[in-house]
Image (spheres, rainbow, N blue to C red):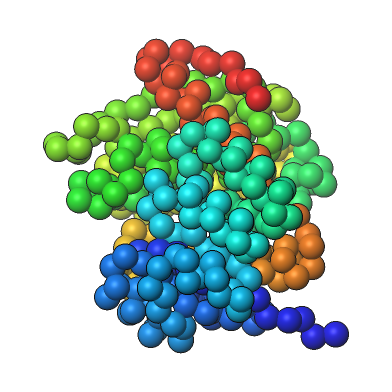
Length: 326
């Protein structure tokens, strides 16, 4: 039996909406209905490019019966109110990361999703890349033996103008690092962290951070992120994953395929676009239409935020080890 199509609307037409538009176009069981953004010109450009209509406000999306799911791509402060409104209107929701900056807000979404009997899935796109899913299978199967080390590295230069949209790098990039760790190895027992400001002159926040996590299996996980510069060496640590075990290992780099699309950070790396497309395919085809659980849940969003919060506490104490509690 042929699958139905799920009508999808976007709330927010910022830079990430380009990747969502491409992902929806590549998903055979998704239909791009339209987009709303207070910046009408930006929304109009997105709608025209991907063949949808221009919504004048969020209420029009909520009332449109052809919309079965909404991707919440609005600024962070609007994620929770927009997602709550969509759930109350009976729409499934994919909400971009970070979902919220307070755990209580994410719990509100959990409650609203359960009440509405609809999905509310965090936009944890990194883990949807096929190579990362294979790494998880290898870890869980025991093919790599006892895992003793995990590294996630991110070195992508962001000017102060671009970085001002994100704030400190620990909140901006630490969340993807944390949910990647949760997906592959689970919850850490202890966390220690350091932060530094290297190239910012106007922004009063960190542009480099290093987090070390002790895992229940005994492995040590290293989460490194920097907006201070790119890695120009012949073996660049741009966006890299490495898992090592006593019987094998896995290495994956976003830089394995690159092209000239440098209109935004990471857009020149094929794995970034692929991660969003795979995330959308899984959300539409596997979760909504087939009833499978998401690869990452709102509980993972809570745990990722908890890891970041404890890392901030550790950094404030010059790297003192902090015991995690869940």
